[in-house]
Length: 135
Image (tube, rainbow, N blue to C red):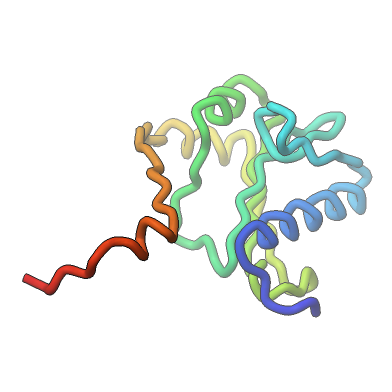
């Protein structure tokens, strides 16, 4: 066991796990993050969006970018792989759930579009603000 994972290490471990999983099942694939691709991993047949969870995904929403939703609707070979229990660090204890085709379509039909902005709040700015008393 490599120890507890945090931040980007959770995603990286999940992607490495999926790449091994695909190769072990005769479907070699490659990491397509950062290439402009619609999903994290691509092989000859499957396009795979990976959702990495430090613990469990039960009851959680699956977040897709608009282009990922569009790809999922248009591409019958689009899959979502949910990799759970990643934070603890031991791939032998990860759990994989896969969603595609007839299982994915009803979820996409219920998708809710949201629009929001992430506003960076640098530590220096945080530290410079005086604390206000409650009330």
